[in-house]
Length: 67
Image (cartoon, rainbow, N blue to C red; front, side, top):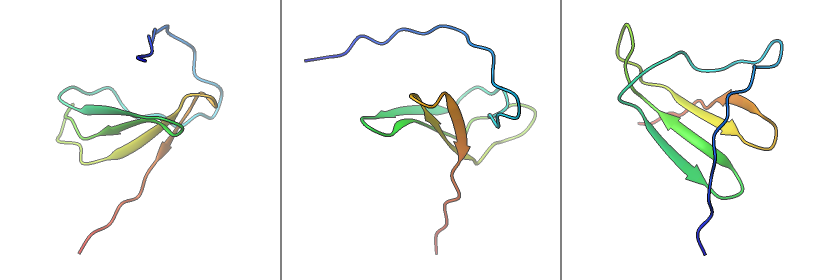
């Protein structure tokens, strides 16, 4: 069964950390986790990973590493 998602603009809470405006990024919905956003570009190329926790209405920066 598919879910119907709807969007509405909310004012961010005071002190909330959130990503800057960008284009060319990817968004992936992960059941039970939230929405993951990667990359994109604005004034520069952005190599960032962010998580939006839907129930908490907040963004988190995810630190990812590799070899």
